[in-house]
Image (cartoon, rainbow, N blue to C red; front, side, top):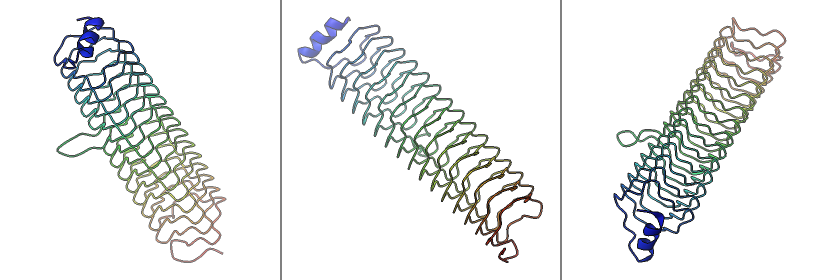
Length: 331
């Protein structure tokens, strides 16, 4: 079936193309609002700038399909295969993509605002500049796995308020991405690149950030309770008012980081690099700082009651007004 036949049927009132073979069809700019393409084969078809609002593409085969600039707002794409598809600039506002495969897809500047992306496979996808504000990518045990964004390119992506709980973002590229107020509870960000990323008010409780790069990232009021940040790079990061209670920070690099008023109670800083870090008024109650490097760090007014500091390097550190491990206050 060619493009003209498809349009002819649609214009005559027949919007049902369930299980049809439409592979390679050219429907550039076509108006197919509300069309039913469930289980249809559209692989390598051309749907550039097509209007597919509220369409049904459940289980559709869209492998390698060109959907640049297409409007798929409120469309249903559950379990659809969009592997290696081109959705550059596509609009998927409020779309339902649960279980869809977007592996290796081109999603530059695509709009996924308020979309349902639970259990979506984004592995290797290019999401540079994409908008995922308010999108739902959370893990639901016994129902949905967290979204697979392993190795995805999310440079500059807008993920404000997105629910990425339990998502796999290991080795993903999030340079300059905005994740403010997003939920990343239990998310896997192992070796992810978050350089210059914005994570203000972000929930990263129990997240895995082992060897992640967060240099120069902004994490003000970020929640990192029990997060695993072993060997992560947070040099020059802004962590003012952040919470890292019980966090694992073995060999973590906090050089020149701003941790003013941060809550680090019971955090484990074994061999961590805190040189020149700003820890003014920080809470480090019962923190373990074995062999930590605090040379030239500013700990003015910090609370170190019960902390392990005996083997830490403190040359040049400023401790004025700090509460020391024995409860005394440094004058």
